[in-house]
Image (tube, rainbow over all chains, first blue to last red; front, side, top):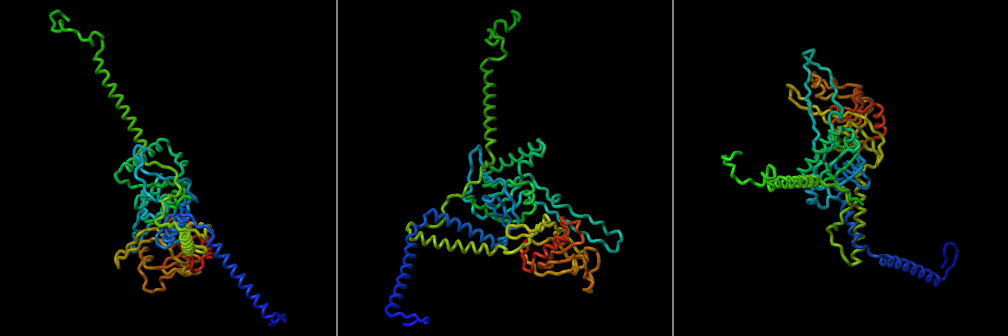
Length: 247
Length: 247
């Protein structure tokens, strides 16, 4: 047998070379199979964790594919993110995140199970943002004095005053309770702060002792006042919510 | 007391002998009731303080197992892990596909802000004017009604025009109390839309304005008015097909 380069091989040597190459390939393949079969099987806990991660990803994909605005609370990144179709519209840093449940005389009432990693719908602002619709009266072109001077509308800060505490209440009993940073509350007079405190305590007391509390779980989010105000003014109606688990 | 008085022969009580106004037994009763009342008040106060909503830091993920049957056989565990890995990759790819790959526009119509975003970065934050929300009713004629809202949702830049001419719709004449022209050429107006216009459907545009002093206020008829310098940035960064998210 002669190769193009002019080297000569006997047929026996060629057969031996081919056989050797086949043995090497077979050996490599077998080693790979053995390596795979020899790898340790994943633990049940690892499988369960992967299953949870997949469940969360499925929910995120479902939210991204729907046509509704949604809010993602990420306690790991300390962020609250408003999204649509997988795109981040606005993100707000969170300073603190706490979970609240109703209690009577220090005894906890029923706690909603699995509120993390679950999609909540029909979010509504409480108190709602009042939207006044002004009707334009067209001037009468036949009358010279019917045209009035233009009065510009107020700024959003003037149109939508933000309460000291507000909720975004979702169907099923979860609400986001948004509070500005406590330092901002210190700017109020002590009498006003006392009135606010007593008012809030009384409302919470009534809510907690109700036969069917409106808020089974409250997520208290503390933000800087400007972020809390921006979120209140900007939130679209009927948002959905996903709270990522803390890892 | 005289000898003839009916009380003269009456045996005096111990209370009279001691000089006290009431008997000892009846003196203890108000104290006991008073003490009990105070105890009850304190107990109610403590119970009241512990009634309402109790807050604690958000916990780590619930360890509730996902609703799948996890096998015990190592071979089946490996197969399940392999299946999960594949599913996880599919979902991650689906989520990534939904995210805008390049720069996109976000408009907050309540707070009159426009953001140019790319991934997690904000490239531009501009003050704009979105829809006023006012209502215009046509008196006489067809009795039509227009509501000047900027629509919510996801849109795309469909067309870009330099030095756009405004083709005034019917409401523009009704609002001014002027008759609607029969000649279509009488509807065109130059200069009022600024240097550029980016159309995103149904007659809505992002365009310039002659009224930059009103930026930040909701004064438009539904379009989004942008200041000259910011509009130039948007024009440069947003080719046709750029997503526009409005909330």
